[in-house]
Amino acid sequence: MDQEKLQQQIRQLAADKGALLIAHNYERDEIQEIADITGDSLALSIEAEKTDKQIIVFCGVHFMAESAAILAPEKTVLLPRADAGCPMADMVTAEGLKALKKQHPDATVVTYVNTSAAVKAESDICCTSSNAISVARSIDAKKLLLVPDRNLGHYIAKQVPEKECILWEGYCPIHDQLKVEEIKQAKEDHPDALFMAHPECRPEILELADHICSTSGMYEFAATNPAKKFIVGTEMGILWRLRKEHPDKVFIMPSRALICPNMKLTGLEDVLRCLQTMEPRITVAEDIRIKAKLALDRMLAVPRD
Ligand code: 13P
Ligand code: SF4
Image 1: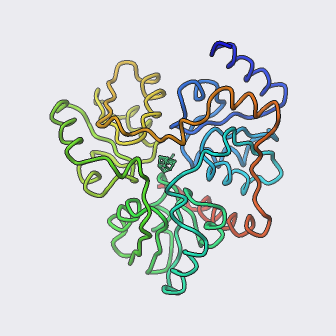
Image 2: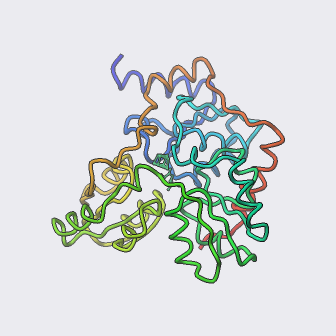
């Protein structure tokens, strides 16, 4: 079946079943095209909780659908590809975190949403790339355990120097491989471009950035900054909406390697099948869900900067 027909069929079935289609900013173009909502991890979790719709088709990776299932257990949360994971989320386990907490009993555990429900359940508060600094500043404790992204951890530690930060040694294999030489080359080729970078990039990359922000922060920066050219320091899926919303602006990828294979797994056939079969469904054991929800709710209660 051709792509347009498949997209129409999905939209029709979603309407018949009363399902909300949501897609992360890194999903394939054809998936973002049919989504009711696209956004960053924080925006999508909030939408999943507040929607009246009872079925959520989450086009993203496992931890994102799990966050929706934690926040809205009464809803049916479907992840079209059960094998869409996040290697960074797999770099920390609940057991590993428990062991680190024992070494630092006076620390508050701040956990990036890119983690399993079991890890969130061992955490005091969650954060995303769009609210990490506000979350860290909202905490009374002097000492923070920042889990699992060491790059986001470095970024928080620099912005919140009054706290002692202990970093977990995890990273995103996609953002972490971006090299200083690639940014310098892109800047040399496009001296009039501004460089916007996701905080999952290494500290030496963030040093070169004109603006550091979440994926949604990049849409906002491109919309509000009068510059005409931007070097994009994140996964290439973000280009679809940037180019659609700003046909007059130029967006440059500094590397060909900024592609997350997990975010590219979900195809239109997967979304259609998942709406037809109502599988795979993501659920979280109630004891873990309650604890993980507390960490997410504390994050959601922090006022935005
Ligand atoms: P955002 O929270 O900016 O959407 O990032 C999620 C993610 O997986 C980045 O790699
Ligand atoms: Fe995980 Fe990185 Fe892919 Fe985001 S881009 S889902 S952090 S592997």
